[in-house]
Length: 199
Image 1 (cartoon, rainbow, N blue to C red):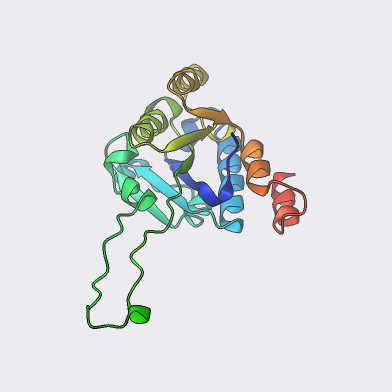
Image 2: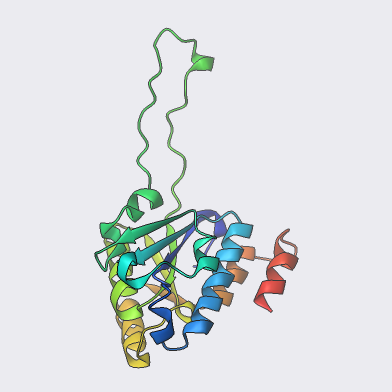
């Protein structure tokens, strides 16, 4: 199974200014997250961010935060305890059509198709990223974790998180896997623009 851009949403977890200097390979991880966010925006994939206790850990890297539609502050390690799930799967409420309106003027109450594939990346892999991924699985999303855009303060913690995620049914991918699966072919209108970021 491959990742389709039309069914995807990108969630970037806690790339925060006071946290990233302590993260193993932190600069490379932010660069990979930037690649994902730029590609997502180019391909009209929704991009969401989270920030863990931003008063203490600061905001996300400004270049990433600028690419997110909304960034959700949180105190729980699992971002599913924030307003993120409502953004990922908004509740469709029936419209208030008056019965007296002719059919052609009444609102269509059919919900738009949900984007059920969550492409997830962030820090720390063994805490907030892991708990958010497991929370999204419980809410019946398909979760794909982008390994080269994730890290922890210690490499071993990051690797243990990947082992546990894979054991729970999360797909582990790289940023280039996501990029080329979203694009599908070299004749995609976004291919040349995307290629300059990939290279």
